[in-house]
Every structure is written in structure tokens, then in C-alpha cells.
Image (cartoon, rainbow, N blue to C red; front, side, top):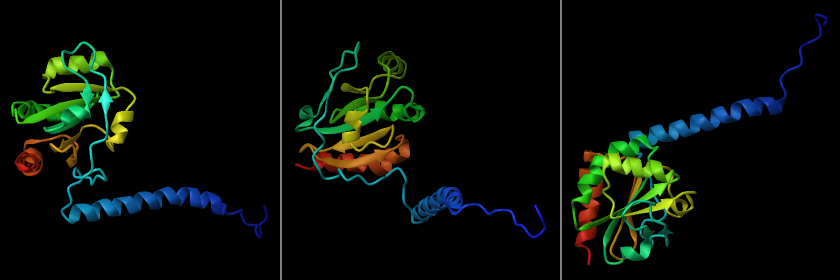
Length: 193
């Protein structure tokens, strides 16, 4: 190569391939920061299903458990909490004491959807942690949870007596989220005709 020759520059396609993911990540980071600065709670992700009928869901029971599976037709006339969980989910372990506490409130029908889990692992989890659920449905492939608009586990939905989804909480429930978010919504649902 002579002094007057220049090294060929990077192609435009290569530059786009390098900078596009960086730009997308930066834009998403800015949006998250703006949302957090405005006092948004990332656990309260809006759901297009709020105010709509809960999706028709029929899931088989967890094998070896003395509880029925899930059938949303059984929710009629009850205030129901639907908790999506898995034995492999660390945040599910964190929230489990809150679910145990909620299970003592007989005004609420607490049911669990076991998401993409092995039956033996799910039974071991409930055996170790306790089983707060009146019913446990198995969503082995995750298709039923997709109908609920689930992003991941854990997620909890509040369904009113009329079968409509009233509230959605993403992430592990805590004492604070129970007191300031979920319990007020449950009380509203219980007060509704």
C-alpha cells in the first residue's frame, strides 16, 4: 500500500449493524428513566385486559396434588386472585409468604397457574413452602398464560365477581405492594355488587 492509498472504510451496512442496537438500548433506557422519575412503578405494567372478561382458561390439575385444576367458569360470583408462578422462579419464593397470608382471607378465591414447570418440582415447591392455592392449574407450554398477557413470573391478576380483570401486578408481591396496591383493589372488588 502506498502513502496515497487509503484503507477502505467500514461499509454503511456494518455501521448500521453496530449502532442500531446501541441506539435502541439507549432509547429504552431513557424511557425507563423517564417513567421512574415520573413516579411510575415498573411493577404496575398496564394491561389491555383490565376491564375485560378474564380469558377462558381450563388447565389440568397439578398431578399428585389434592386440588382441582383451573377453570375460569368457577370464578363466577367470587373475587379471585390468579397467581402465575413456577418452582424455578426465585421471586416466586420471595412472594410466597404474602400468598400464604392472602390464603387465610376466606373472602378471596386464590388460585395458581403453574407456568412451564416440571410437576415434581412444582409439588416439591408447594410441599416445602406451603400450598396457599384453592386450585392449581398446569400451564406446561405457557399457552394459557399468553392469553392472560403474562410477561413472566410471578404475575398476579385480580378478577371480580363478574369475571372481569380488575388489576394486574407484575413481580413478587411484598408487604408494601400488598398494603398500597393489591389490598385496596381487593377491598374495592369485595365491596362491588
